[in-house]
Image (cartoon, rainbow, N blue to C red; front, side):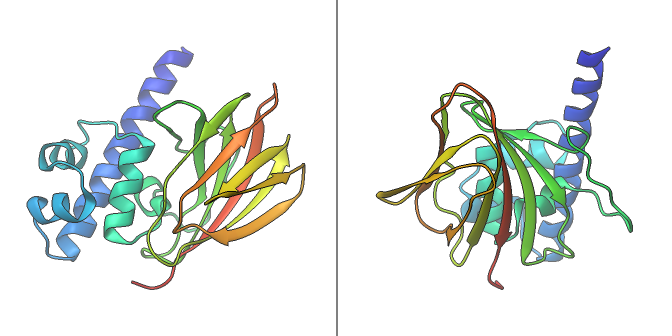
Length: 193
């Protein structure tokens, strides 16, 4: 039964991302070829995503969001008036190396300038999202465990309830050096496009 729920959630997420991506693309009056150029994601992949026929990885979703200069939560969350975000009930996206699972907590309004996520970093793992779009500032709090956060060539050690703020438009990485899962809380602020 749990596998059926997971498959259903993956299908729901794929359809949500596709529907939202198509809406944004049409609002901005760009075609798939132009979208492929600005996101560095192939036209075929983008078409499959828009039709809900592909389950994009976290790396692909980041490329699309960065190319469109929108928070990734814009692609991942459905719009509702009142939202309760419960652990393990929302949309999830997993990094290519399966080290990090990201759960958007709340949607930003109309391709807004802020997004909030929970992230679950596996033991002895590293997640390197790469540099985000220009002007992104990340605020990260360790909710459980300990994490090393590398921002360019500097590494910072954070423990439970420690927080850090840094420019997300540079190379950075999250490292869990322990044998237990680390839980992070992200707030990402975007400058206006």
